[in-house]
Image 1 (tube, helix red, strand yellow):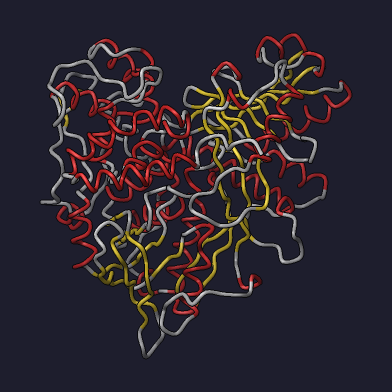
Image 2 (cartoon, one colour; image 1 turned 45 degrees about the horizontal axis):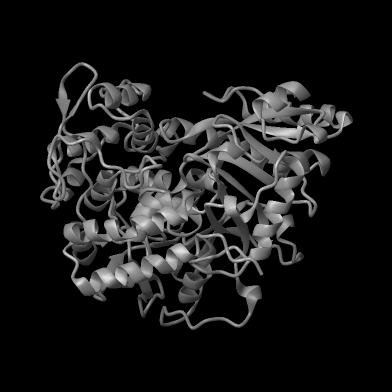
Length: 608
């Protein structure tokens, strides 16, 4: 995957301590050496020794997007994340890339042009995300079941308007009407007694943590210094001007403290952005807390998700019920070999480990039973988890459902820029707006930057140069099956999550790795899932995975798909990572304890 590096960026990645890259075969039989991410040790060395134009705090999709946008414009960028990349909001979404059908409905109902612009912008960004990494993001049909026949014209007009606003979106078919019989055939689990017909429209779907990881890796490829498990303890301020000139940080893994020097800071910490805002407002750059919620920029809104077996949803069709008994949306989506089911927009406290309550799970199960032809019990739930969305606060309302997902860009004391609100789909535009504002605040940086180029930029693994598979990713799947002998589900899983980098994993397996001899068939982590032992090794060596949770929850999605299976395989993952990272017995025990605490938040809660 070629990237237009400048000479100084190439120099910054020399002697980076990378794991040796194995060559992969191109479609014409030639061999190429793929790009390999610099080691974490090299990244930490850069953070300690260099002075950056920009420090981005927050390693979710927006923070990674800011890093990619700024680095691709020619700025020298550092990206810091206190936990793992996409450990928070960015990894706990509904996995949809969407414009917002409900927002479009509100725009026409209320003659609200701002809501219309929000949908139009999001649909443009949907098209970008589908093009930037087409192997991991794809169009998914979503059925809207209609109980009363007289509602058909209303919803038909709405989905057709959605198509119209989206324009000629590559790879996204137009909406269509299905009769009762067609709808029952397409989604066999639907209750036929509550069905007069259905509308099917299309949106995008992705694996969110891996998509965000791709944005971060592409930023690193563009020259950004990136590091997870680096917590910002204090903003460093110039005593004379009050301007922020860096961050005092602590390496969470080692406990070491040091200063990252920079000319500017962008706060992209999602629901946690008020912490850095308080640091910017204090004279000493520290967070002294706040007792006044009115000072906060965002209000958290929770979304609960449960994962069911795949037979609850067809592999190629989702379902959305636009109005449940309390007015919220209920969705069923095929995802990673299971059925993702849930709802959104409930009040929630801010925490890094949100957990669904028993009442919330009961609500989803109860509402699901109204629309399916069989009841769902707690025994069907393979995993249950919750996410927090950083919605922009409306001080005139206490109802989170009334809050739009518009984003805001704010300039804080010391010339720090905060980007808040928004949603996953618009991460790239949010990043562009944040960098534009930063350059307005720091005109000396603007003088030596180019325009934003991310709108047409493909991500790592997307065969940017077209030399590996000509951007036809079914070729990768066929190659894995025919040339490497992989089972179909494994080949499809690797292609769907890694793109051309799936061939790197295949070559690593063929050549052997520290705990496995060469030329052996890939070893599954769990018999009923396509996740591989080799993915653990690849995550450690190429994707900055430092803990078992990094691997089980974010490099693979096993914890999100089947929490019990994740618990069962945990000892093996701990043992493998211990050998790769040189963990002591005490370290393994601590990692096991931490992982079990996390996995406890992913299981179905006990019934009250």
